Length: 134
Ligand code: IDP
Ligand code: MG
Image (cartoon, rainbow, N blue to C red; front, side, top):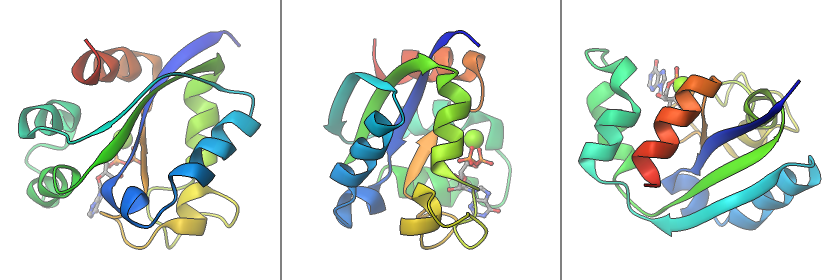
């Protein structure tokens, strides 16, 4: 595998429920490097760009509304196979199906409030990093 960069974001529920420290701890313990990190709001435009692939799906409007509803933590993370490594730390999209020991399995509530976002490929990561850090 190669050194990759990925984009990850602690969602509003992860911030509101005080999981920032635990999540950052898990990322660093996995050997990944947090290169950039910023707390703040996501604009409607950024949300629509980030979730463009889901436009038209029944949950799209709720998803955009949710991710813009409160502060998030935006991160650029690097390391060997960082994209897949973050996805495995995160766990399955549905917290009800995410394995114990994963971030979503341990702290997730429902599909919207599933604690964390992580890019699904190197291409998505490059695109998403450009949306949130430019
Ligand atoms: P991912 O976050 O694991 O990559 P995606 O399929 O890319 O999952 O979906 C993006 C986000 O949209 C999910 O994290 C979740 O919050 C939300 N989502 C996905 N599918 C559904 C659904 O069927 N109902 C409600 N929300 C959904
Ligand atoms: Mg996705």
